[in-house]
Structures are given as structure tokens and as C-alpha cells.
Image 1 (cartoon, rainbow, N blue to C red):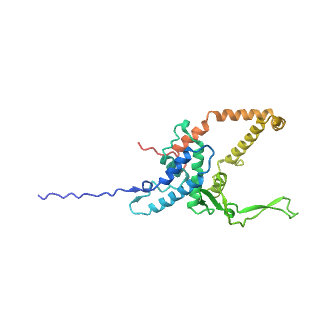
Image 2: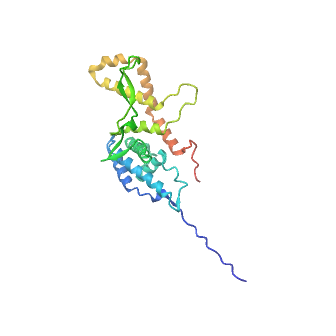
Image 3: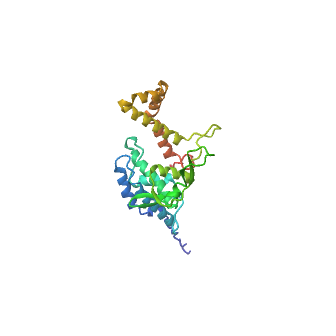
Length: 269
């Protein structure tokens, strides 16, 4: 009886595009960003340039034969890029005592700018480490003094024709990001939608102004006139609500357990 010949089935190992990315420059600059002093935005431009190149590199890699795309296809989302940057330098958000808000702010803004740059939005470019953009693409209109007496406004918006480059800071990045990727309404009721981001920013600005007044002994009259006893009660309530960091901790938990489709991520046993 002839022996049956067994055929060896050769399985070609698929390589992930992410595994082939050259991230040496990104890693070096992420380490620098993690170690800089608080509120230092000087490395956003450099990181944005690195992230933009990483995205372009990834897009080219997934076109190659034998490169796995399935788990990488959402690599250019804000969440996936943030996770990649954190993993690149071994930064973990699980221990709340090791969270570095300044580093996270820099990385998040750099990711947004890098994504916009890779998609050719707003003419973003990086020169000498500075993030720049085309003026009239970032600011389509500019205020101009109104000379039309029929319009009861001191200033009106007119088309911006300035095509020069301007500096792009963190607040500008957030603003232009929302133009391309508008945030969906967070309120599903029929009531007037509240812009949580704007309301929190306004509240922070108000509290910073009041705090500045309170530090100046010569401004006690101004402080007294601006506040009532009820206002002070609300400020005390805010202090209690944010003192335990519950909101931040639960957001961190959701960020780890909820996917981009806003559904729980299935855990592999």
C-alpha cells in the first residue's frame, strides 16, 4: 500500500502595519514632552509633524502585500493614535497618581494637529518646530469696523483674503478640529443643547478672574460687588463635586472600556 504523502500547508505570517512603523523620532519627542514643565506647548509642532508622518507611513504600509490591515484600519482616529503614543513611551493612565495632565494635553493637541496636517486641512505646516497654518483657511472671516448705519453693529465679519502663515496654538487646534470633526450633540432631550466644553471653559475663566481679584487686597470692593452669598454657595458645591476626582476617574475607565462605536469593548478571555 502506497504511503499517503502529506502536504505541508505553508501559512504566511501576516505583519501588522503598526509593527513596521518607524517611530524613533516620535518616541524621542514624546519622552521630551513627558518630561517638560507644565503648560509647555513648545513641542506640539514637532510632535504634530511626527504624528503626521506616522499616519502617512501607516497608509503606505497597509498598501503593501502581506501587511495586515484589519486591526489597524482605525489607526488614524484620535483614540487609537493617543493609545499608540502612550504605549510608545510606556505611559500608563491606570495609576491616577502618575497621570501627567500637561503631557496628555500636549499629546492630544499634537494628535489633532498631526491628523489635520496629514489630511491637508488648513494648510498646516511645521517650520523650525512651530506649527503654522494659512491665515484665511483658519480664519475664513475677520471683523471689520461697520460704516453701514443700517446695520446696528460696531463690527461685521468680512472675507479674510490673507493667505500668509500664522502661528497655531492649542486653542486654535481645538477650534479647527471641531470644524472638520464636529462633536455630536450630548443632549438628546428637546431642551436647548448645552455646549459642555464651552460652559466649562467659561466657568473656569470666571473662577480664575475671581481668584485673581481675591488675591489682590485692593480689589476687595470689586470682589464683593461681583458675588452674592448664593454664588459662594455654588462655588463651594463645585469644590465638593470635583475634589474626589470621580468624574475624571470614571471618564478614564470609560476611555479604556468603551470603543469608538460607544459600545463596551469585548474582552478576549
